[in-house]
Image 1 (spheres, protein in one colour):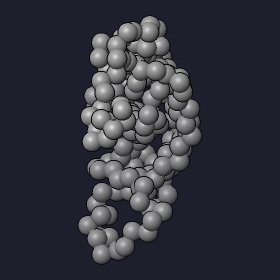
Image 2: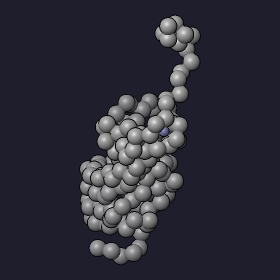
Image 3: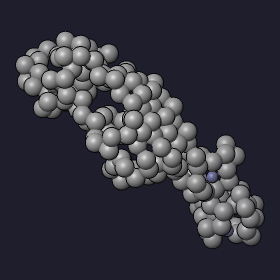
Length: 175
Ligand SMILES: [Zn+2]
Ligand SMILES: [Zn+2]
């Protein structure tokens, strides 16, 4: 279902009916705001949006493949992303009104929308960024790069000596 027109989830339309969402985004279409990964292959989102009180609820399944550099050796690591989402977006105008109301802990991850609704592209972009692991490592036993010559120690054994750490006890240990 490719229309080429960015999908906008509008409150006006949601007041009439639920919106079914089925979109595919090619790589380079979504803007990840300078994130340290690239989208490899299509990103698909299938789900629906509905109005729950004044909140927009977006539910669905998101799938894509990303590529990010290994934190240790900088080699490319493929990261498959499969994520079920169930998100609530509250109108920004309500913040002012609720200023005095304490936000309960389970409400901390409620997002907000401004104006007439939200762009599906913004929803999926945010979810992809959240799905990327904090640490990206190609293999649990990745040896990383040599701090002296920069060689990839997974591929070659260089002859460098690790720079010795100067500690007040080093002279004692060498005796
Ligand atoms: Zn690595
Ligand atoms: Zn080296």
